[in-house]
Image (cartoon, rainbow, N blue to C red; front, side, top):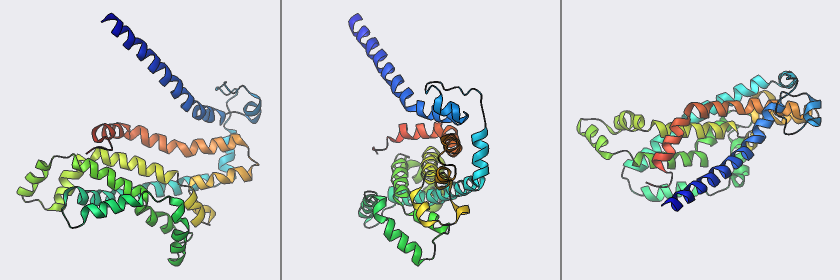
Length: 283
């Protein structure tokens, strides 16, 4: 008994030690990048890489970011796209997921499998056809090109799959009781299903926000006007315009990553609860 207890204790120590080292390895570059954005160029290139504390602390890099680029406009563009698109995605994905989870119609399983099959197609394969479609629709350099394709992208198909799995875990008795009381299907969806799926909806909101916020290649292809660029595309101009001053690039990157951290911290309890309850692969 004592030997088993000792083995478990030693195993726990080794496990937590390895996890701690891995955690530090993953988080250290991020912390270094943030602190380095407050350093002078001399400290950045000549300092000890393990010295995380800037001395002196300077906001010069952040001031230069704002002076060199319309960074506020880039942030507003990204905030608009990363808020508006996820809202539309959640509306469409939740309605589709409810149909696949609860309604019975001919070919439901085949259609669902075909939708999942589209997730297997790499996004780069569809870049040229999508660009031609955008040009035919005269949507090049317009926000429509960044909004409409996102509604039928692989990311939103994943949202449908994720929400369907969660809707299947909601007891059918709740729905049956509401229908007996005279609720229509739409009211059941609106008043029963959605309120019980808040953690899953919050998770989808986080994932959709992050996907849209970090989108780079497609906006760079379809947008031409400088002032319409999202922040991830705008960051690339920091390299050319300042002859790659990495302090300024790190300052811009720190600003760009802050919203995703804030969104995750606000909704993390819903995210963790959903992953634990749904299990992603299960029901």
